[in-house]
Length: 164
Image 1 (cartoon, rainbow, N blue to C red):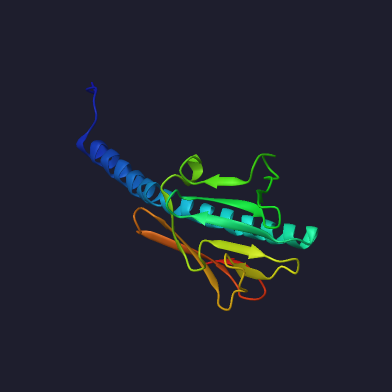
Image 2: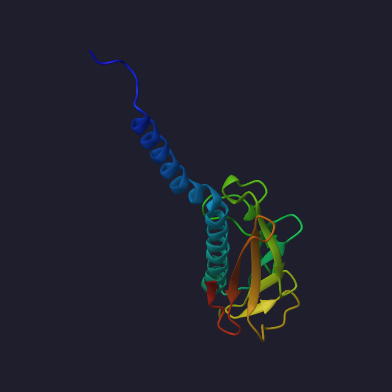
């Protein structure tokens, strides 16, 4: 007659399996901020490309103004000074990392171009003072108080946008 219950070997195997599952799941939880950071970088890069495309298509200057303090930015049309329309939402083109759940915890740490970048009708990048970029424009984003950091770069003269 066999007694009901688990043997010591079965319990040890169960603990080992639970440990392995925990080790596999742990890095995914830790890197969720890194995934959010990558998504935020791709969003900014995409919006920069969109802004440049609008300047090329409409043959007028468009720009993006970054506000690192409030973790936000907006796209605007330079010659009339109004916020551009977001093609996805059909509202003003304002992006706030504080209010968007997918970007919570992401900081716009700094820019090296006076927080404004503008594109002329040929797609060339200018800083907020109207001077063509003479060196690469850099937007630095961080997650978890600097534990993760990525940059979005705008090439001088050509306006090519990349994430590094």
